[in-house]
Image (cartoon, rainbow over all chains, first blue to last red; front, side):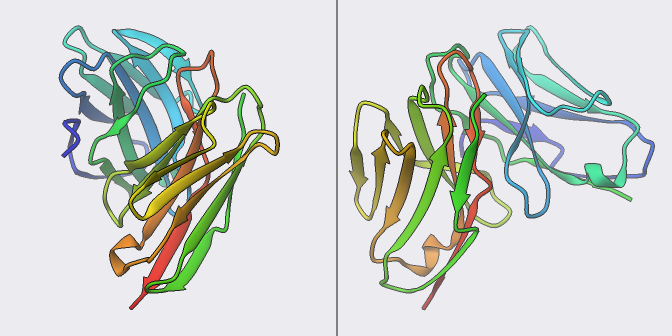
Length: 115
Length: 112
């Protein structure tokens, strides 16, 4: 157990809908990262927050947004869902978030299925 | 930004054999290279990492080597066991960026 929690574990929804994925980082970690992992694909970095502020952006669609709250948990909002958004969404956390790199610990993931 | 390529995409070995997975990176300024193991349906977990001031690092049956001149690094697993079967991801960190760039992964299958 990495100490990073994600809810829900599974989510099944229809095209056009909106969902929210939640992540709680390890105690003491200030940085949260979101990744998308589609079938047969690697880990695509979406976005990073550090202590409540957006720190880095990857291949995140405009239909997706995220935020990090004062208690450091983060939410990833996916809207106008398409079939291609079906994937495993991972959250990871690390102590720091600056250029001095430190290990990322991954949560168990949320499997999103869009029908 | 950084670009990481990983080969092979799949690797099948017999139990007891060695396995080698290779990654190349594009930016010579990258300074940290972790390897993650992801079992089916599970989260990626860090198994070994190496920093750019070190050429090789070992941890029991696994080792990582780094060739900065050629900009490539490799994961070596000796005496493979069926429980080594998983997808392995390499990654690179570029100073000035707070994120990792991952390779596309290698599915390792170890047959008894």
